[in-house]
Length: 575
Image 1 (tube, rainbow, N blue to C red):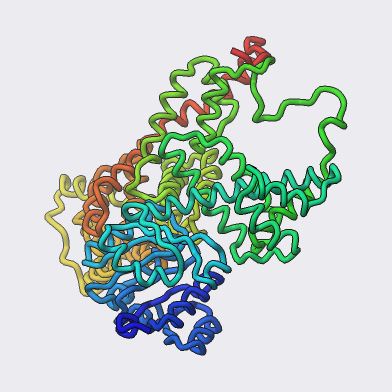
Image 2 (image 1 turned 120 degrees about the vertical axis):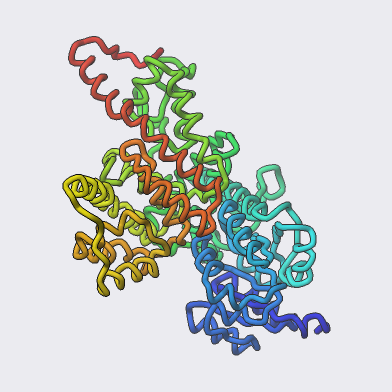
């Protein structure tokens, strides 16, 4: 045990399959580890090994020079990092090391949040699985300033080999790309092994040859012999976490303008497996799923006659892709739903479709907001009563879930959007007062004690006040009381940060179908006061700007049907 280890307190938050053996290695290396997990048994196991069993994340951070986070996703990391007690517990010179697999944009956002309070943060996700965590042979992708990485290096080297990969967020980007490759290798290996066994090849011979040839990969060298051929399927990394990382990688590809067609197909296969397997399935279970899928499917060569093209197949009668094909593939790579409406637009005016795709990509290629939060903004715009675009609500909902948004966050967005109806009072009551003044009203009556308490409560729970509520409070205190009760629920029980709530308000106030100017300005001011950036507010506005295209997407299918009824729409889809 070195003197440095004796004097270094390490907070370790997250004692799951990977976190527990990692924390144990730090204990055995002589560090004083304060370990915390929601599961009491996990904390007690570390206590038995010599760690301090912390009672909360804040307790784990108290007095720690380095605080390691090994958590399921960025949403959970955000909950920890933005917790007031956790922030207060951190020493001024503490270093937060996020070793989870997270979203790079969220990581950068949280690093900036901590930096504003004088706290340093790096991301250092790992590869190597549970065995690597136990043996100290993990590959660690450390991202941050050179100085910050060097502060963490001695501790990280207890856990594995450290690679400095760039500025904060780079580690999570590289980890996502690594897992996209790993998942694609495992998928390809599963198909080849299933086909080879059906042909009559010995699986062990196949693996021996692959591993001595150019077809080798981590799947053939480690995953297949250890977890698939053994029948254990217990690598310690879940299939759902693999899918999460693949989605992060695909989102990064889209932001950088890389179509990543193979990655998209791999993600579709994994998502299908995820829908059919148990929620807690190990990621190596996809091998068993693929084998079953192959076994139940007849080879195409045994199916005589021509096959009907799928909905995703080319739209021409020959093998040459059309301009419509290229646009459709670009839409799908960007996550834009393709339907008969866009098919029709591409027949008549492909330049419009391409221009829309480029405009739609602007907010999604930005990094100010996380992809999951952008999907929540999109949902807020579509679900607001002033717009209520029913056709787009389900795609927006699915996109939010796919990008990792929690159901509670989605409900909170809807709760915030439900307050849009109060604008009837916000606009109507001042107009009523103007008319009453025209008829001789001399001025507002003084607020009584109960009304003043209501005003103080609103300010306390919402953090601000606007003069247009004075008249409503004076003339209709019962309605105002009910509105306070209704509108403050997500502020008292919600999971979004105050800044995020204000950004959601901006999204539907600024939408063209509402364009509530007083509210937009008010919530812009509030969002900035809560720490939102100009770039984040602009990305919200960019997303809201896209709803105008729904006039096209809602009308084009009707036009196509009418033209078909009149015999004026060609049956051949080729251009």
